[in-house]
Amino acid sequence: MPAPEASSLKEKVRRLPHKPGVYLMKDRLGKIIYVGKAKDLKRRVSSYFQPSRAMVQHPKIRALVNMIRDFEIIEVKSEPEALLLEGRLIKEYRPKYNTDFTDDKRFLLVRVDETRPIPAFELVRFRRDDRARYFGPFAHSGSLRRTLAELRRRYGVILADSTPRRLDDGRYRLYDDVRQEIYGHPNEVTVEEYRERLEKACEFLEGRSREWLAELTEEMKKAAAAQQYEKAAELRDIVFAMEKTLSRTRKFVRTPHTPAGDAHALEALREALGMAAPPRHIECFDISHISGTFVVASMVHFTDGRPDKAQYRRYRIRSFLGNDDFRAMEEVVGRRYRRLASEKKPFPDLVVIDGGVGQVGAALRAFGLLDLEPPMLIGLAKKRETIIFCDGRKPLNLPLSHPGLQLLQRVRDEAHRFANTFNADLRSKKIRESILDAFDGLGPVRRRALLEHFGSFDRLRSATVEQLREVDGIGPKLARELRAFLDSQSPSGSPGRTAT
Image (spheres, one colour):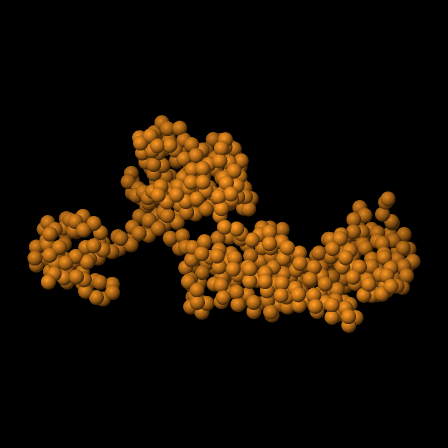
């Protein structure tokens, strides 16, 4: 049946009774887009169509009015009955504009974006259709802000006013100011450590939300009993929205990694990459350097979706000096699979390169130079988490919620952490060894002889005079002078061991 014309709609309004009831607004397709209650149906419904009020209406109300092509009413005996019926019909039909009004800017929501490595708790006005977790809406902003401050102190999570900084070893520094002392939790954390804090904070917030829900429900009943129907309706909308939100948050609770979960991720990755079987063995390569110096690489190995640290490898770049990620990638991939081939060991099911087209091409070139058939080889480009293929297929962007992509991210992040740790170790070692440059009695030949004899600077620093004299070219006088010099350089201020 076609929707009534404007003239017939006005005539329908004129025939409305001066009685309490509920009205249902419909669009041109007959779909219910808004449900409202009224103490006086004729007065309330006619207010939507008065030209004199059009300019002062809220933008959302004007949008609603422009969509209305028909309506129907349900008469009831009293205003409390209208209030209950309105709530039941909103739950049944879930009209678009009732939802929009519930998410009005008067109320706050708490949003936690779990796609970020270190998610923050932020306050927002509107709910987006994304993978974030939401709590609320909350009618009392003061209580909510105090609760978030309590979350930060109690669990060591961050709010939206903080910007965590990634460190060279893969951990994150949450604060760069005195707040790290105020909040009393370790300031530098791994992603896994922070996730444990996050889950505890979310559980606490969900529990507090349920307390507020019970309080609001009681407040709504009292308002209705006192015939404060507008207040009761507003509270009822908040209660409905909170119930809806709390039912959603349970769906997003993270569960620990289990063999079944890993198997699901592997199967999802197999399907996304078009592989014949799930990639039980995955190896990933990453290059790390500081402005072209201390260039190193890492290779991590995952078995059945889990880190297999016995098979991790670290590489120093040998074939050149300087900053060239492509040549570095070609070198380390070639070294890895040349060795596996010579030892007749199996290749992994999947090789992942941290990088884009250039890095993937360099890795593929390494296999070609060795005349080896590569396994499935892909790149993971950080900017948009784009999967790069080496067989001519178009780049692939999976949803951030895709379990296969999340597995690739874990593998890539572990390779990045391992490479950065190796780079930091080398830089620290170089800094320690450079202390010997300040001792006038040693030239490059004797310095090299000392480090080769003791194996590390830390062992050299703890050597006695007699042990120093065991090194070729180090006599009694030089040994005593070197021991005194090392004592003066001791970071703790205490002397090292001396011969008795």
